[in-house]
Length: 245
Image 1 (cartoon, rainbow, N blue to C red):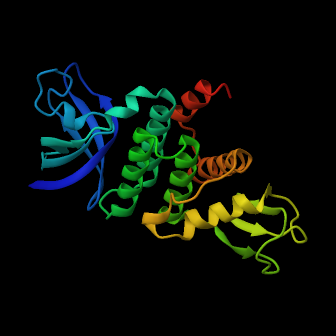
Image 2: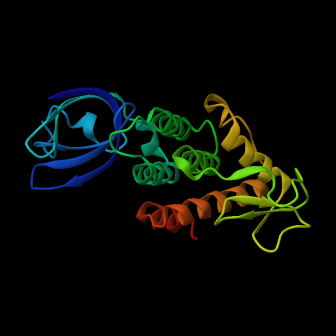
């Protein structure tokens, strides 16, 4: 059986001296894990299309126990990312995060489009890397069933107070009068989070923040992602080492 689909390589592993196992985020089938026979050799016809972060047109065929890559024709390899180690590191982290969130055998078009747009903005430096990372984290979690309730205070229904408090565990907002604990957030940060979760997909990156608000947003979206995926990310640890954190 053959499957034709577009997809983005979000993970790669060496499985022998010459073969690789890749994980591809596809629009129709979610995550597909497939072997690339001879995928480590320079002359392999599928080398470019199966490298990490390559967006390609794939033809997979089902073997006795697993998928294999028949052809992989690259559409975009985000070459410009290689010129900025910080943005490249963010891209690697987002690929690892989306690989954790995406299901197998289910439609994933919105997740794929979000990740592709994030990589484009990082590669072309259209938006600050920190903002792209925050948007991708929170929106991906929302798409994947971890959407926080950011409409109003969970207790009294107040739309805003200064500050508001965000409950990371339950994904709820609380006003200044109702909060017992939680992460204090400025109105700017709360507004940005609402935009990320509730806006149309094509507008999700259409905002900007002050440095202070961006730092606040970066911390809360990252902590929310780490808590609700319940794992650590080596790519995130590397990113933090670059930033001296």
